[in-house]
Picture 1 (cartoon, helix red, strand yellow):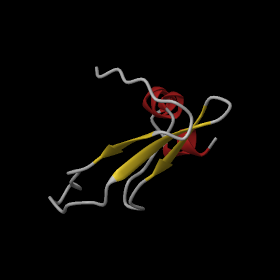
Picture 2 (cartoon, rainbow, N blue to C red; picture 1 turned 90 degrees about the vertical axis):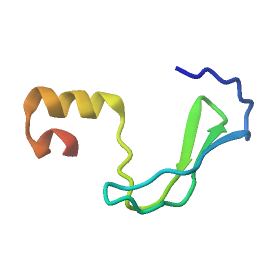
Picture 3 (cartoon, rainbow, N blue to C red; picture 1 turned 30 degrees about the horizontal axis):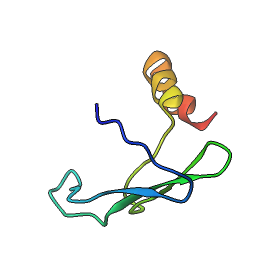
Picture 4 (spheres, rainbow, N blue to C red; picture 1 turned 135 degrees about the horizontal axis):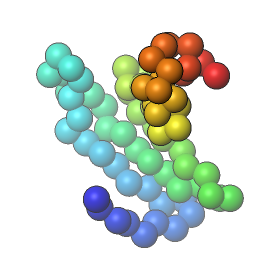
Length: 68
């Protein structure tokens, strides 16, 4: 795991990300916002979910779990 220290309004960029078909996607930018918030700017083809929702999905096994 990579640990970084970022201040408010600083960001991290992930580049070189490919989709399942091998197509290069736009860079993903993760910005640290005030009040412990995180902003993510990414290609619309990328699904961004909170880890809790992904865990709930695998426990429940249905798409409905992701819609709560």
